[in-house]
Length: 347
Image 1 (tube, rainbow, N blue to C red):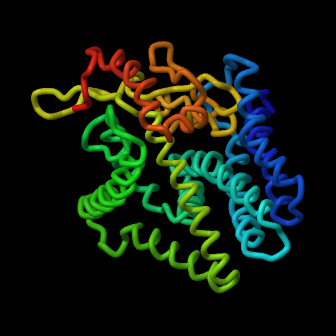
Image 2: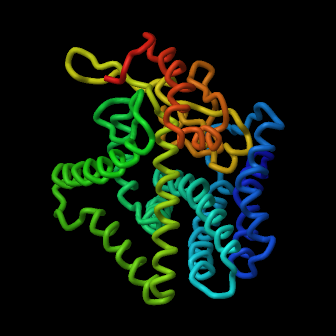
Image 3: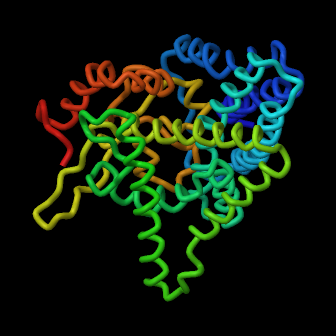
């Protein structure tokens, strides 16, 4: 296995047994899981300024295998985490640790892996990623991300591109609602174009699958389990929304006379060169290359030489974005540089 793939496997799989043990036995396992997802990741990111985790643009059976393992691990961890949070064998602080560790894992690793899978050409892999999103009650992202975000990124037409001066909390509400609505309309338009019945709309599967997960959790784990499940889903969703917020904040594509936006370029996405968080999120912080080549597998994504770079790692910037005034103080001047004119707002 090439060294970069070993790093991907190490970063994404090491939290799995810790979270599972925390949900079953509690104790120091929960603390260890939280530290791996936070302090450990931060220290490793800071220890090495930049590591090349890019392989030639080709097929990677091992990388695909890792994505399948991560997806299956996601479902197992979701069951264990909900059971642990609903059960009586863990104390209050042990449950806090399980919720924090599992929620961070679902938000950073499961989301990133599902994102990777829905871009794959294989129907089976695409559907596996879709079901990860459905299990987090965010199934519509499967359609909205591909049909709306990639088409309209860094324009007003994209609900998932944050505008300069827009705080995260306002963005999150707008992006969730807008992506659901615009993704649904995009699927309707796609079905009309290819002459398919409206009953083939995948939104029926997204909503039906969500009902199955919610009612199944209620039936097996009761009201406490349902509350835990919903809280974990919201936590994971908020991190996906935060990722979109950070990676496109304040960057805009110019609109031509005919109303058509310029071609997507490296300058329309924020990137991060920090190696461990990049490995943990399957190179999602190499966002410019992903938008330039959406079908490119994660081991091949590279950092642009001429693209915007975040001043700190993506997880650190996500924490900063929780304080909108401080976020704007740091990021608005940087966004102005890439906009070309200080004070320029997104068109």
